[in-house]
Image (tube, rainbow, N blue to C red; front, side, top):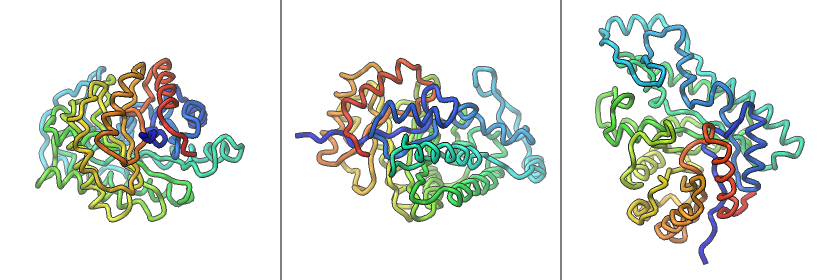
Length: 348
């Protein structure tokens, strides 16, 4: 008898959430007893993933890419190295704001837990973007200069979160949402590497260092993503091979345990070839979540689930959607919740 998927993982954003409490309650009601970790839904100004990080550089707009109203990248003239260095040297300290957002949500999480709405043992999940992902917002010519400054600022946010939230209550997810496109060779318009050396080693090493920066005792996981602009990938994965390579490289290089990895599964892929790379997965101590649940597609979800089970054998895994649910229509969210309830086992 095939074991049911072990729980559900929420990538980050939650449908219709205007506050963290809204997101927590919606998630708990929609996926009862199936969530080991609970994100705050990325409400309000954070609903567009990293789009709000452009405001972090409002004091120095010259370092940002420019876009039209449809978020199409507008060409900008090249800038000299001397001019770029002078601009960055005069830039005030960066404040990404992830710590402020997380601690505000943590206060709401604690309140709901004290009221019995959040079960004991469910962890507070904080989602942070990889630095390379945010550098996609930065204008060419500035990325190498801004990257170390933003890295320090983002890790400063992490340190503050870790100082305020008890380790046993906290889970950090690093969102790897640009690197797959770069490694697929889909550079335009955002994803061209700006550093020298081997691209795979450079990107995976950067992710591994972020994962390794999470202090001992705090759970950490990966969300590997192919994009969700307009509910479409930037590029379609051939199979799960590249994702598995990225995850393996990070797990080997992080210098610490990684509690979970989330990988996407396109709606059209229920074939054995797509899931075949999972056969060489390894890392049995890391929870695996496959984003194979798609709205209004219970039959397709079952086919994708069966293909995954055939590839993984006795290896247990949980289910998820491909990406976050913040921009998901209400009726689609309800369908996803219903499908998950039908296929996933309770874990809390």
